[in-house]
Image (cartoon, rainbow, N blue to C red; front, side, top):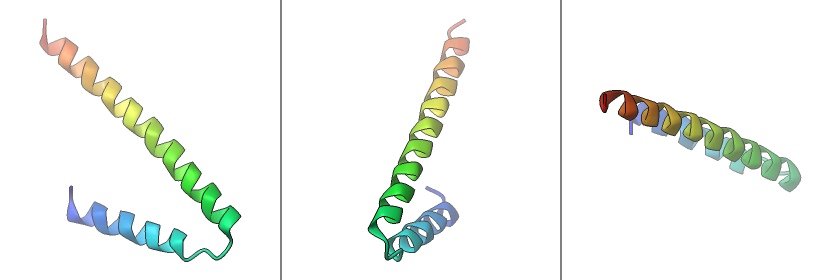
Length: 56
């Protein structure tokens, strides 16, 4: 993983961890999980399309 990305992710996690309101913290983490899951799904789909195009 690129060090710059890791540092940004770690900073975001630290910022969320510092939120005192548990409800807000849970909502933010759920949102991050939802968005990252969707991004991962898109990337995996692009990877499958790329692999399929190489088979021809």
